[in-house]
Each structure stands twice: as structure tokens, then as C-alpha cells.
Length: 190
Image (cartoon, rainbow, N blue to C red; front, top):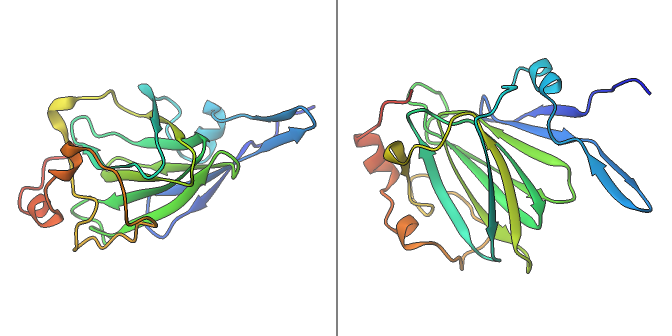
């Protein structure tokens, strides 16, 4: 059987963000999906090489974020391999017409969606439902703790409509600066 396109890209309202629909092949044994193929990613203009893969397991109601890294800046390809999350990207590109705006999408282990978040965005998610969620993501640059940063998830200027009000967040994330503080001290993105 000849190779067929395994991924379909859908543009989001904020330039650069993409939802990727992955073909899920199901039968009476279960399912199979090809989550990444360099050739497919090159065809749709996405990076075809990644520097690091990360796996996060979070309990129901856990909110992680909003995090970013500036040097080297990281693009992220996010997918859920178990459970459900509401995933959010905030545009932090100072020259962007959508600077400070966010986009959110539900990712599940069943809907066949991946979320491409290019460099220049903050990222966060909250676990939905009653089961833990396993989030697997590829990044375009290795982790550099000296240039990581974040913005409070409940910042009033960003006005993100999280689907859960009662969330569990780390003490580190509770202490993140506001978007206004970020704007006053905008880091250099590289």
C-alpha cells in the first residue's frame, strides 16, 4: 500500500499555531497512529528535527503553566497519550499583532489532535476529567533552566477562560509574575 499523508494541519486564529490531525487506525484489537514522520512535517512547513522529548503525568485538576524559554527559544509539539487536557498558548512575540492573546484547545487520547506551538509563546494546560493525563511533547531546543520563565495562569490582562476554577498548581507557578510585569521586562528571544 503506498504511503499516504498521515497528518493534516489546521490553522488557528493566532498566526503560527497549528492543530494537527493525526490518522488513527482502529480495529477490534485497538488502534495505531503514526505520531511523527519527518517527511510529513517538512511537507507542511514544520520542523522535522526535535532536540528533546518530554513526558508529563498530571492528576485531575492540576494546572501547569504558563511557561516559556527564551534562549534557546522552544517550539513545542504537544499531544495527550492518556486522558484529557485543555491546552493553552499565549502569544509573547512583541511584534506580533496578537501579542498577549491566547488560544486554547482540548486535547485527548482519542481525538487525534496535536498542538504545534512555535517559539515565542507561553504554554500551559489543565487536566480535565477524573483520570490523570499523560502529556507527551517534542521540543525544538533543549531545556535551559537559566532562561525559563512564566506568567501567572490567572492573570487578569490575559483573561484566559480556564474550564476549571478549582485547580491545583505548584508553589512555583503561584509565584510567577503578571503579564504586565512580563511586558515591563520583556526578555530577548533567541
